[in-house]
Structures are given as C-alpha cells and as structure tokens.
Image (cartoon, rainbow, N blue to C red; front, side, top):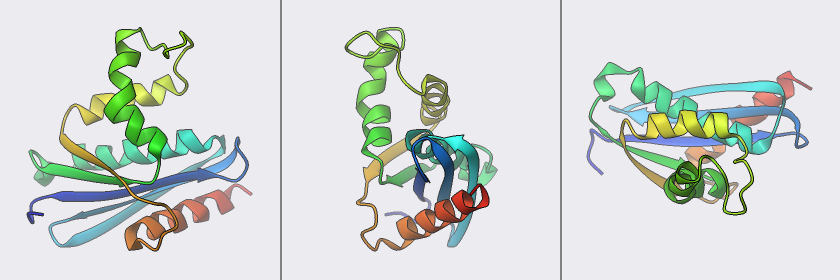
Length: 151
C-alpha cells in the first residue's frame, strides 16, 4: 500500500432493530488517524452501516488533500459491501427495484452512497467483525458509545 492511500474502517449498529443506533469511522491517511461517530434515536442496523460508509466518503470528499487518492474502505457489513459493489447496478437499471420487483430498502442512503462512491477510486474490503482487527474494534466502540447516548 502506497503512503498516499486513504484507509477507512466503518461500523454501524443498533440496540434492537429498529432501536437506538450508532456509527463510527476511522480514517487513516498521511500518518494520521481520525475518528468520527454519530447516532440516531430510532433506526436500523443497515441504516447505520450505510450512514457510516456515507460519512467516511464525505470526509474524503471534504478533505482537499485527499483529492485523487485511492480509498480502501474496510467494512464488516456484507449488506453494504455487496450492495455498493454488486447489487446497485441492477437496482438502478430496474428503477430502484429489487429482483423481485420490490422497492430497494434504504434507497435514500444507497443513492447518497452511490453518488459519493462514483467520485473516488474505492476498493471495498469486507472484514470480519469482532475479530480483533484494531480499527474495526475502535469503530465498534464508537458505535456502542453513540447507542448509549440514546438509551
């Protein structure tokens, strides 16, 4: 990995589904590590996973010195990884409908993520959650701290 790469970890979750939720991100670039987190009083796990990815790419978009760099997003959500890398092309081609002609859930967030994803050279990497991966564990901790704010 080249020093100019941006490495991101994301996590989102809920206590109950729906329930109070939180998300956390770690952005590593230029020898520095930044964290960011947030939450909502009533949401779903998938919405928080999507929000984490959106917020991570928003950081990249809003950081001038990150322009034109390769972005690696490490995510423990197969839903988000598969959605943005595999399923979204067909959803869009079908007018935001699933294969069984139902509306895509969380379409508002998928549209935001798609718009951001198209701005960058992003590699989406699935990582196993709760497996001792340092930055993934930090994201989980950030997420859990946000959930506690709403309990």
